Length: 309
Image: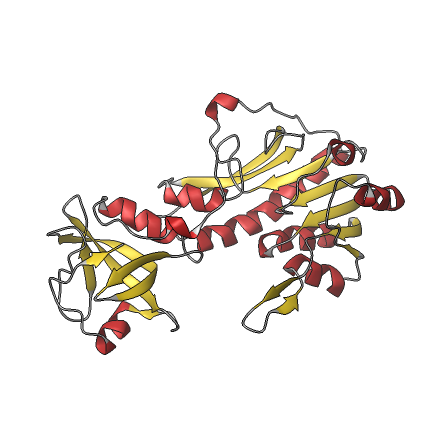
């Protein structure tokens, strides 16, 4: 098939690579404009652009999808289908309707659950035990189009959003391959979404980061792994603000919410339900991430200290 691919972050790259490996003719890639990154604010291309360039595929980075420029490009490329994976721009109806096979989206949740910008993180934040990927025939709504194919994967108790991201990225490429194969053979059976079963996964902000230790140990653990690697959960301990990248539930019994229960090599903190979380990886401001044991060797944290938001 003649395919135009629209995607931006690292999550999208396996899908683009799979299109190439499956022998589809990828006639163009649309992605977000380059952005300044790092302390030097050097202009950096999105991962999808890097992959497309490496494979000799024309790249287009329009500022808007609504001013006619994008549609004019598509009229020259004449794709059979547009594949969209974490592109980051809303497509107008004239683009959705342009290709013969329409626009097929790879969404990182089991629709209709977790529509929106951050389905991976909110699955973990909410303590879900299963997630997956859905291919969808796009319409003008936000992740409301007819479902095509799905694949599921378990969310293990200590899995972070970053780890689930990597798993779903690979799974998405598999679902995309199966979806386009079925489309070519006329074997797709679109299924309407039940709006009553849907929920929304909004974009993450740093306002979600401060840890409230009056919540249950499970809720605190879910927050830490759901916000890893970005924006990362945070706490203030002995006057220092720390990012918390990893934790584990433990059998220790707690005292006051936020109370450090041990001296020594483990950073075990009490939560509101009388149970504890063990903090495994922390990062002080301006420092690299390190194990809690390593941090404790260089910082005086006494038993009975109180961690706060």
